[in-house]
Amino acid sequence: MLKTRVIPCLLLKGGSLVKTVKFKKYNYIGDPINTVRIFNELEVDELMFLDIFASKENREINFSLLKDIANECFMPLSYGGNIKSVEDAKKIFEIGFEKIVINSNAFNNLKLIEELAEYFGNQSIVGSIDVKDTFFGKEKVFSTHGEKKERVDVVSWAKALENAGAGELLITSIEREGTWDGYDIELIKRVTDSVQVPVIANGGAGSIEDIGSVVKKANASACAVGSMVVYQKRGMGVLVNFPDQKRLEAILR
Amino acid sequence: MITIVNYEMGNVGSIENMFKYIGVESKIESDPDKIKNASKILLPGVGSFDTAMRKIKEKNLLEVLEEKALKEQVPILGICLGMQLLTNESEEGSLKGLGWIPAKTMSFKDRIDKKLKIPHMGWNLVNRSNNSSLTEGFESFEEARFYFVHSYFVKVENEENSILKSEYGLEFESAIQKDNIFGAQFHPEKSHKFGMKLFENFARI
Image (cartoon, rainbow over all chains, first blue to last red; front, side, top):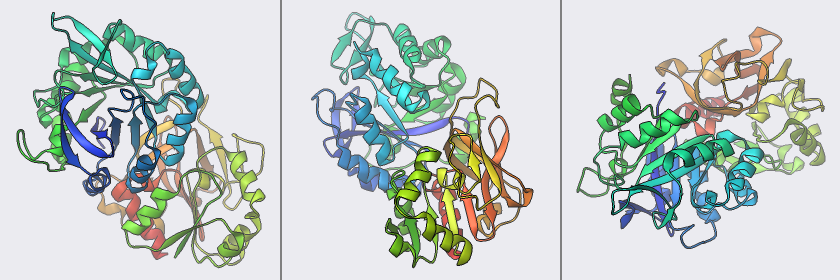
């Protein structure tokens, strides 16, 4: 059994799946339900859905879409996108999701994470942090899908989320996202060195070698993958796929 | 036809869909009169032990389930909390369980290494402890693995009732059986090909 989880991270915009590059250029991938069906056949061990506009537009969570997804998914699922309360979370879990991902709504309100962790247990709560270097080369944490600069640094915010009760952290490099250039190993390592909870590396995966190196060099517990599981190859058309289990096992050994 | 009992303890959509996917007919029922005609029953469950037992009683399902399980002896599969309900009692609550399989539901808390998180959540391996029609063909998998989410685990009184075992700080039953009554601690509906195999087996019993 693979000890490292490789998690397709699928982005929702409206009712569609999209793939972005550096949080921009929304490329249409397809219908979420059809995509989920393909991932079922590929025997993927876990899926993550992020509604990337929900917080930005302060929109209601699309529960009916989530329900359709959950009913078609034969693997564990997580969802992120404008979860604001225990009530929201309760509905998502009742629908059949196993984990929730919180990013923007934790800023200025760590209590939300505390309440969710208290109610549902740390294991169901994923704290998410998006990181980017500014024009002046200074690393900053951003919320609302890369729009709003926050006055925290990634390591202290990671610790704050952990202390508030996040059982897992999703660390995304905005500059790597959608580029196929590999994970930001230095960034992931800085986070894994300072927290106890498992860290999911995100942003930049282009090959199984990238997965291998972020696990070995940065101690990532899990790897989120985007472009490489929805495109045929870099610069080519949409093709939902997943790396061969045997090859993953070999590289992660 | 598999009758999935709906007693408001968790979403059963993906269970129904997995049966559809493998080409097995199923329907979701909460009416005791309809369950009376069931030829095969699936008892799901997510939530707490006492709430589940209370719901079963409130919805007048206890009598019909006992009739089906013990008198008519139709195949019944309890999953997750549904498996724990088959046991005599649980440390999670004070109500009695269905008691169809001599076993106890116990808490991981204070029994496993503090470093291990509770609930036990994630994929884990299973090992066969006794042959069963429910786990037929599992040997064709290099490693059979399933997705678990639970804070309580089951220990059987008689080893012969254990059909799969797993480890999480301690060894527990990941599946149990007594005659026509089966239980699985994991979520087959979230365990893609492994879950499908188990559901196919159940459909064939």
